[in-house]
Image 1 (cartoon, helix red, strand yellow):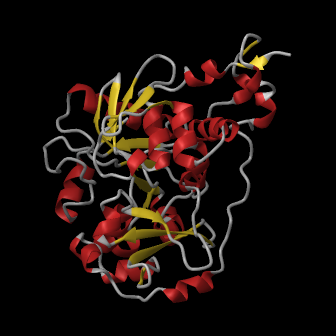
Image 2: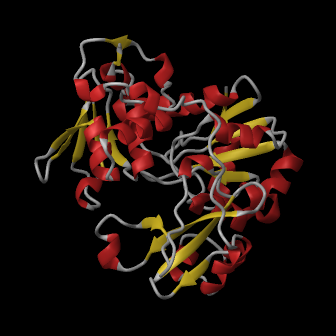
Length: 353
């Protein structure tokens, strides 16, 4: 019987989509070229960027320059997610939309790969319904705006609109996440204890004494439920990375803020269709400024990521790119970070594809 060619899966992983995969694992980056990317060292819970990905034409290698360990991409997913081999391959295929049923076969692979295909779902298959949680858990959180969020330009009224509260037991800001119908599908937590943040756990799923409120970040658009009236009336949406950006826009524009956040760079057909279902005619991509200057390898990676998102929407609506041409933003700033005046300038200068 022919076996699944694991190399065919790994060969589809490159400098563009390794960013999506690592983003899904919680690792951002601070340097990127076509053959080398420096990720946050989630392998040992650090905020340093000593986890390097090197392109080898076969999915690449991840090397930790603190501990000296090296993994191929499947082995790294096994390590970080505590998965066996088959579930790790499944995770990669689902995250990167690699259709296992279209991968070439070969007969000269190791016996432990036998019948792997039957364990791997079609990446385009209909996803399982999201887990919903009893909203009574939100009573645990005090409606008390945290100073650090106020300092980041997020108003108390915006936090109230999104149900954000303070979970004193864990010293966390609790961020409820809802599906388009308003059902509670997860709770994100912002840690405030320095000892925890210093291990790389700035954000994580919230855990109470009895339950873990994790959710698949790739299947939600933060703010879609809260802002859908503005999106429907304007037929326009702005796509940000982090929830903080949507909250900043609600602070600046109130109920007219037609925006959502994606928990990272990755966008997919599922989230695209959530927005198209609201009748949008214009989408504006507003990624964080992940480049020092608008040239060179860093900027090339940024452009490729923007183009990937734009390609999802281009057949259906007008696509605009909101990016910093005049050095109004700092490195890694969101387009919403500098207030309404700078936001308006960036919006007016957006590139229409």
